[in-house]
Length: 193
Image (cartoon, rainbow, N blue to C red):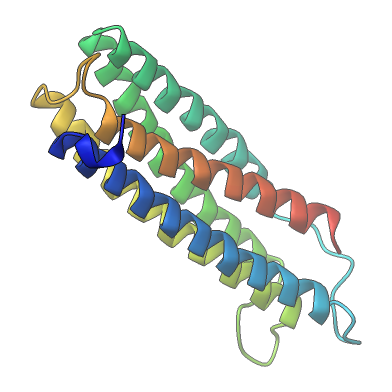
């Protein structure tokens, strides 16, 4: 079918998906820039090569991967019109998302406890990059949580069903992107020193 003959709803749904993908591509470019700067800066004489990432970062990675699975299961349950099951998975995703953020701050505390600071006379460029990139990711996860809360509210209002999952899928796509982005970042920090 010609796109000019689509319904207003189809046009609106496609526009929302396109805006999401523009945002995701922008975020990919931003994080690619920061990780590229990290690589370029690693040739500095004061670059730290012998440090351990906080254990909380690894636990948070497990949490966000599980949260992506629960969001996926919520979408699948909605497509089968299992509203109660979908709601449960969405709430579990929200709890896991909050746990991810809490663990990130525990990780920041572990870094500080090991004497690594974001700024100041005892800071290093290495840790400044790690703090910056992780904090910016946390900010986007907070945006993902706001999006998830909107999805949960719409779910409670009965907005989603097997024939209407667009808003749920858009929220899930953003959440999965944030998950994959964190997995990339933790692997990058772990493998590239």
